[in-house]
Image (cartoon, rainbow, N blue to C red; front, side, top):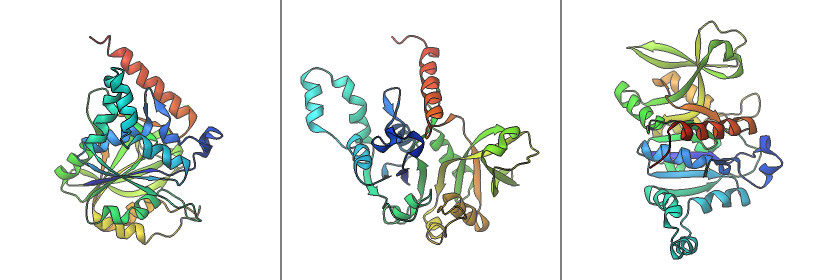
Amino acid sequence: MRAVIAVAGMGSRFFPIGKTINKCMLPILNQPVVAYAVADCVAAGAHEIAIVTAPGEIGRQVRHYFTEDHDLKDYFTARGWQDKYTPLADLHSQADFTFIEQPRDDRYGTALPAIVAADFIAGDDFLLVAGDDLLLRNDGGSDLADLAAARAAAGVPAALAAATVPGAEAHRYGILAPRVAEGHQLLDQLLEKPTTYGELTAYINISRTLLPADAMAYFQKLTPAPNGEYQATDAVIAFARDNDVLIHPVTGEYHDCGNPAGWLAANNAAAQAIVASGPRA
């Protein structure tokens, strides 16, 4: 299993700071948002990770963070600050990173990272993950590891992670509508911000998907949606018409860090979790 992490967005909701700083590199406490996604992929068993970046300065920041900086490491070591650098050293040793630039042309959308990473994916199962979202867990678990385990237990080729929201809030989201087969909730259709929704709770898409290699054919056949985007959900829905796709509710607290309010809420939640855990020995 490999992982493709998408961080090539323009960051328009964070402008003007988004012009220079990739939103995935904004910190949740002392780590960038994308580092949490990487850790989740590694926990799920994906040790070959492609990070799909925008070209130029925005992409350089991401590459630098996930590439060993020997001069900086030596500088910290010489001053007895090894503990500060250890989290980065551990990160670099846990995965092999490939960096792929997503061209800035007339195509855009959530499906493009998978499309431009087709050669990297090759014949392997792959996780497709947004790099600017956070699943915050305080139990040491991994929602992507749980997703992989749930897919294996259900014996299906693909699985989607889903956050659960009250049904009254369904109009704000893309809703994963399930069908039940052999006790499993399988993807039936995507309801885009439904104006009416009769269930007490709803599953929302949070851009964390585990797919087999043959799902790539559905990405490569995509045409733009009415809004002009090449949407990953369109490829997944097309795949689900021919194959079973498990909907797996996540345990972690979901935060959309792609906008200032969501990013701030994620930092507050992460800080509160540290306070709740009590003083460290």
